[in-house]
Length: 421
Image 1 (cartoon, rainbow, N blue to C red):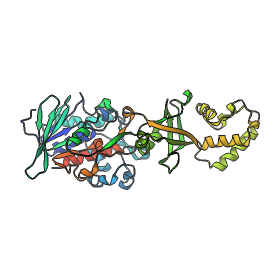
Image 2: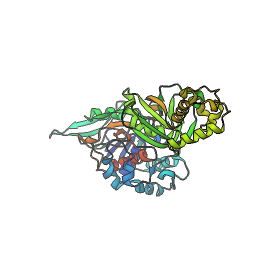
Image 3: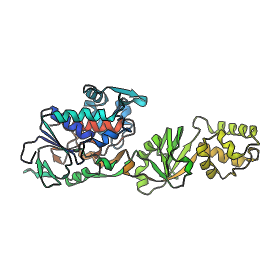
Image 4: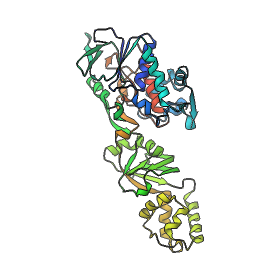
């Protein structure tokens, strides 16, 4: 397809938002050109949710929006027309059975992200209204100045020097996370060229890096049913959660740490140090745990402290405990004094690690930041600065928790952009 042919819509990026936008536009009879810089569309979609694709969450709208960062209200109009039930119907009508799991998370019943991808791509490939062009990178937007001083989009210039014209361009290039799938931030540059403000981006839903050197025994070890809260050295909590926490070679990961990263990533990227507090015994109040420790110490007086720590902690955590508490490992329990018992109690209820950074975009599930929502029409996803120019998906300053929130945002904003005239 060359620049001279009449096209109605150009979609830049064949991820979740772009595939949805192209599908909706084509269903309305519009001639669509879908441009993908990689050799295959939907690379990130095919690996999301560890290959299982947690495509949405069945929470109520009110609850759902509490899991969205930036300005969650921006999504109200979009979600009013295409939300979780509509998205589920969309895929089930295309032959993909869905299953609701713990935490209201929705997956394809096959547990294969590929089924979600194929439901979109196979229809697009068969549609006479759609051309998918792979290995096709956009260099810049064609923006025309109108007589009245307004700007409108006219198409795109490709990296190979050719042009494609259309009165509507949807930028759905993703963010910066998982750059090997094609998300390299190209959409931000396109937005800036159009005059848009781009909120500085940081990795989100990403493991956190500690200042302390962690014992090797901890690497890849996972704790369940623990509490994690994060705060500055002095100040209010930034995050407080309960669930599963994993250790990495240089910090903490797993669902709790990933969720926490949404609230602390920007601070860490700006060089601030924060403190991660881990409560290994969240179900037991501090005073009650202290009484239990006294009883355990008395009942096991002749046991060596190092060995006896298994009464209260998994073996993998013991090296960290010994390092943190400064209690001689060979002491017998009947030699542990009150001050040392308090140090043990403090470790069990408030183990502290200093956070200094996040892992990079290669390990981030989503990107925080992006095209400013103030410059986007929330009903249509159209630019308020350039008519005919739309943005959808992760390129926008929208991100959510793990649990299906981010894909729903991508699909809904893609739907809104594709639906709009």
